[in-house]
Length: 115
Length: 109
Image 1 (tube, each protein chain N blue to C red):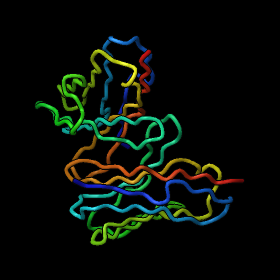
Image 2 (cartoon, one colour):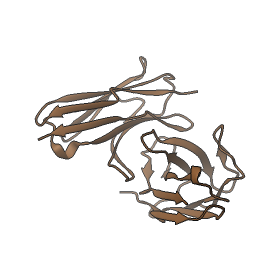
Image 3 (cartoon, one colour):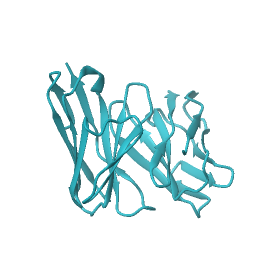
Image 4 (cartoon, each protein chain N blue to C red):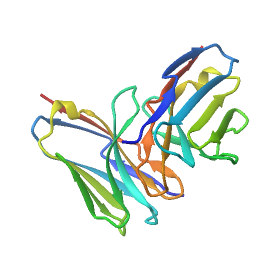
């Protein structure tokens, strides 16, 4: 089956630093990738929709200048948390599918802890 | 804006019981609905995908139904096992993917 690889799985950083998270579709081309975050005991929340070759579409309340998304190829999207603060500590997950009506495959997630 | 609701928020059952998890959504114009399982601190595992034109999907002890017109889906788990303990999420796909808050299932030995 389709595989989505997300890296790193866990990162601890100091407040003020930037963290990049990679999401790769290993055996298919994904024109669209989605980024979610999940705070403890809360549901997954869509942050942004990433389209290859164009600017990402951000959900209301998500700062595009803070959460930089780059979808430079059909197999790679990156999320950069810029100037991270403790309140950005969360579980970040990416997902991708081949086509709009196909199954969505998820990365294994990245647990970000900002000290 | 699509809203997805899951009931109950938590469920505890003894091993061997059959159980039903519910998911409702407000906008019936969806491409598909997907059920996921999430273990603590981990990513998601896709369980079943139901296209908008389908009524149900089955995989092993799992059966998911979809009534698009009423905005409802159910996940039926037969003969539950302790290993089924996890949070179950439903998600609907229109132009985006929207998740419910999940049902935290505990199956007691």
